[in-house]
Amino acid sequence: MNPFHYSKPVDVQEAVHLSSGASRFIAGGTNLLDLMKENISRPEHLIDITGLPLNHIQETAEGGVLIGALVSNADLAWHPLIEQRYPLLSQAILAGASPQLRNMASTGGNLLQRTRCYYFYDTNVPCNKREPGSGCPARTGLNRIHAILGASEQCVSTHPSDMCVALAALAARVHVEGRGGARVIEFADFHRLPGDAPQRDNQLADDELITAIELPADNLASHSNYLKIRDRASYAFALVSVAAALELDGDTIIDARLALGGVAHKPWRDRAVEASLIGQVVSRETFSQAADALLQDAEPLVHNGFKIKLARRGIIRALSDAAVAGERP
Amino acid sequence: MSATPNGAADQPFVSHSIRLSLNGQERQLDVLPWTTLLDLLREQLDLVGSKKGCDHGQCGACTVLRDGKRINACLTLAVMCDGAELTTIEGLATGDQLHPMQQAFIKHDAFQCGYCTPGQICSAVGLVNEGRAHDSAQIQELMSGNLCRCGAYNNIRDAVQEVLGGEQ
Ligand SMILES: Cc1cc2nc3c(=O)[nH]c(=O)nc-3n(C[C@H](O)[C@H](O)[C@H](O)COP(=O)(O)OP(=O)(O)OC[C@H]3O[C@@H](n4cnc5c(N)ncnc54)[C@H](O)[C@@H]3O)c2cc1C
Ligand code: SF4
Ligand code: FES
Ligand code: FES
Image (cartoon, rainbow over all chains, first blue to last red; front, side):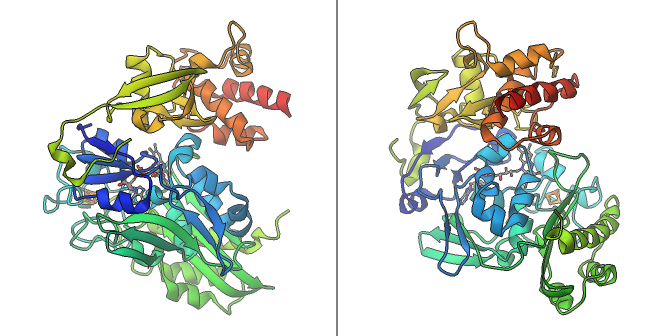
């Protein structure tokens, strides 16, 4: 780890004014310190944001919930409001990392965790995300864990978060504040596809701080399911994950949400596929068609072709389980 | 802690004074910003019970309790623990009286080489504090942040289960 300066502001204004191109905010530190130990991130100045008043979960006037950026992943997953109204989010968070890490990791930091691509982590090899223009060894190298959707010639990495897959399906909004003021970003627009600038994971500017995540009201709580498929049963990143949620009237689908993790540079959600489920009757055939539509543009790399089949079966299974979720004892 | 202005890069690096309650003792310490809690414990305070297995949050050998919650000391900056109450494996016993979790680990033979054990025990105490594990499958899942290369998992689970059962 390189030497750095440290400060601990007490309000958001102070924090964003302290920030510069050479500084980094630190919350739980579970991703940033890891990257600093590997010399991938070398900030000159760490701004400790854990003293900011962003630690609350509250109901919004519109019937949704507002989650402060510093709420820990564990507190969020086990909060009664989240367990009751957004069980999909609880389930996704609890499928990720370990109890220790979830106690440390923050809501804001989870969105900004960086890829687990092995080449990104190895400073002895090129990587366009780490060093723009240096090349992408994953494209033709070991790419078993890499993307099947939305990749570019420059980068085929995936976003590793579980929580974000649920937030995408739940149509969350990201509240941010920078020197120029505050703005709200729709979750679908928050993370980027790699394109020709894979060094940029998302739309956040250097001086911008995530202050909160907002979940709109919905009727999806009784029929949701997060399915995580990985190399070992616990404490491993997803090869493929599926966040599925339905609102049902009898057997008829009134509203549908479907997002994939582990397959792209951002949680993968397609509104047209969700819309095509609405009005249909719950059946394996319906879910199978939705899976085909969502994966229509999937392109395998040398070692990750299995992810397409895995995702297809995962989608059908997650939607089928979501359809009966509320009926289980 | 005073804020550093934007031109921080030109200024000399400084240590910061922090206050801790460490295993029940009030401590005031000067730490450099890049010192991890694990290095502070092991290198500066001679509390070598917490182990450095991976130094990357992947093994749980460094698990300690901060304000009653289990965390990985290797991915925690010491300077960010200002004002915290910390318990390490050295702080669990009361005099010669072992903590019930320590006793249960001995009774169930829940270790072989012992390297992962301080982290396992602190993690298990954190698990009990959380109150979320009720059966053996849940214990297994909620102990998954602690790897044991000797594979003492079944006995570790039994030890935790005994302590949980006793408190129900
Ligand atoms: C061994 C291991 C296993 C893991 N397994 C999983 C898993 O299975 N699934 C999963 O989803 N995750 C997993 N994780 C990742 C973990 O969830 C993230 O590291 C964590 O959520 C990051 O949150 P943090 O608060 O610690 O972020 P930090 O490390 O503090 O920060 C991460 C980044 O976000 C920035 N930042 C933090 N907060 C803000 C804010 N409010 N505004 C602006 N910028 C901010 C920081 O500057 C930094 O760039 C794992 C991590 C480890 C170490
Ligand atoms: S896939 Fe992306 S992160 Fe991985 S080596 Fe290529 S450019 Fe780097
Ligand atoms: S040493 Fe901290 S988790 Fe391995
Ligand atoms: S007892 Fe040897 S690693 Fe667990």
